[in-house]
Amino acid sequence: MGRYKCAYNCEGSTESDAKYFKFPLYNPRKLKKWLTNMNWKDWTPSRFSVLCINHFEEQYIDRTGKCVKLREDAIPTIFLSPGDAQARESSSNTRSKRNKTNGVKASQTIQAQSTTTAPATAKRRVQNKEPSQTEEEPAGDKDSKKSNDKWRIIVDQGLMKIDSFPHFFHGDYCASRDIQWAPDDNSSIECEDPEKVIEVNEPWQWLGLDVRGPLPPTRNEHKYILTLTDYYSKWVEALPMQSCIPSDVVKHIVDIIGHFGYPFRILSRLPHDIVHKINRELKDQLKITVALVVHHQQTGTADLTTQQLIDRMVGDLIEEHAADWDVYLPAKVFSLCFKEHSKTKERPFSMLCCRGLEPIQSPRGLHYSYSQIQESAFVVR
Image 1 (tube, helix red, strand yellow):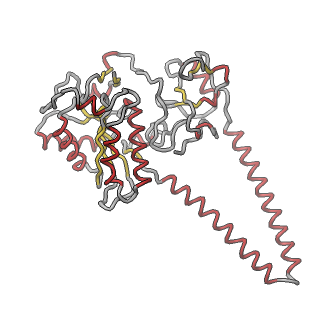
Image 2 (cartoon, rainbow, N blue to C red):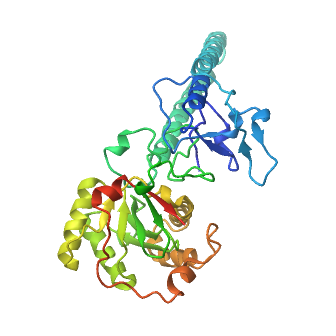
């Protein structure tokens, strides 16, 4: 999949095996050095921002262990500044214009010389040349339009205005220009207050809710996929939907709860007003008083690996079965849940369904309020 150019005009972010490193947000002095060297105005890294290995000199890279890491004094020094890139592009455009001008003059000279001898031939040459030039431009526009028609995860409209929010095309330096997340091998909880950290240590406690789309419409008019993921067991529920209206989302949540029981709460990045409507309908249908779905920005980052697996699954579906991906979706999800997960080294099915856990048939009480959950960071044990 395509990637944003790392830093400015970086080619390293297109490499499939490129190594990425997080910004040292915990060390203000070190972070200032990073940003100074990058020379990028009006940009502040978020906790999702990453920089690829190609911006670091070899002396700053530690390759002695199993994982490639940065040394404590590592500072990125290899960058192409916007001014250099623009100058190079301007120079390239100038040469291109000069060559084009010389070509036109030469063409006019040849045409003038051949007018007396073969006017019909010269006219045919000009007519044949013009269509080829006009055909090249639409081809580029077509490719550009196609690349912008990417499906995405539905997120809060307000958050979409933030360039550094990762799921809006990951608007940072070395990040994917699609739904794919950047690697997060050295993830850590940045919340220093232990009272604002919630641990996930049992199956079906905390779930993540996402809606992906719009996808190519199927014969059954399905255009979206609702996914519900158990952060602990990595179990995935994925269901096709014709629209992403709250009533459709609620219908699937009710069915899943009827089969697996009540979780503590469900985290979601859906817009605030949609989450409110979902909770209102869930209260009516399930006859409960708690707000089961909580808007939380960490919905995706609590389990990056499973997010990547789901995104890859969706990408394969629409590539292989564009007209009927909804028919093949259950088999894909079945395969995903019965394979060994790279993080837990166990099958999600085994962790969720083979431990003798009885489904909880009533809402589960918590000593966290809705606002406390929103302010807390989640860590999966």
